[in-house]
Length: 454
Image 1 (tube, one colour):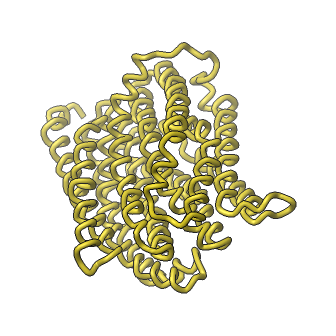
Image 2: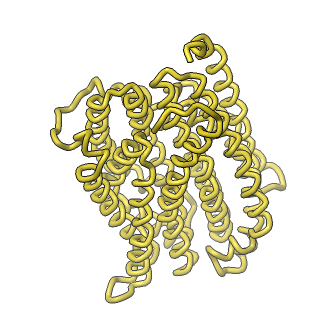
């Protein structure tokens, strides 16, 4: 990355970093998308099972891997301050921490998976598919967590095209193994939705090995010497990562887990409603990749400028990113409104599920604006390493406002299952307002005195 002096230069550099991140996020999302979509074409039971399994897995993964995202602002600020040796050391410690985290997830998951699924009023076949899908995924957890650290390091250097190319390779690999294991082609066992979990685990191992090769063999990563020597565990560095990462991870978890909580509460509805709800959530998550990518790009550029103590530039980057996200969300909303029937048809041919999905997708329109504000603001705040208040705001807006309101509307009004969506939208809106207020406060009251130096 380079220092920028004008708004035009900032917008250009932001795009250079953002576009590969967006492609990367879409590709990572594509793995989950193809798992659900291809399972849906096997049977609606497999669609519901994989969707349920995914709804339980995604918040756990995003929340805990969110802890590892602390590597991005840490490395970005160290690079901005020209401390490359310390940056390399931080990456190695992040890898150690990622392995321990993955092992912890697997151990806890083995104890609580069955009790969680048993609390859901699912048909037996759907429950078994969800359970075995998650078990299959667990074989890829360690490499996936490691990959998130390596990706954070690569992205923090501004080389987001590299992670884009790695992740793009993952999509066709995942689709191929999905085809083989879901439908039992070329002598492979026909496993339905469970085969999607096996395919994803294989894919995670491959992209992690590719990332390790890139960091060892290619410039500018080789000059950091990340794997030339493996220092011992540093509890001090783990503490630094966790002090930043835990609030990030829990904030992400509170946001993503609310969707899983809704799925658990909606288990009282029939399988078609559950499947339609999960399809709409899945596609809303697809659109969320745009503001999420802008958020990740802002963490990099804001962290770089803060590390160099150029606070005016960091502030300008923040608002450029937020404005861009809002504009793109409006465009996506209009597109979804026009083509929601076609979107639903991508996932299923079942008439009942199809019609319900079309209705659910209307509510997905209202997700876009709130997501377009709150996600980039979170990214900017992470660039400042300001994460604790964000955690509290996420807990309040999603779990104190969003979920209770959704439960009331779904169970005590005529909104039925759609009531949960109204609650989710309300929680996102409150979160967006709170986060913007925090960013304005931070920039005005804490950073203003330093602006004069630039």
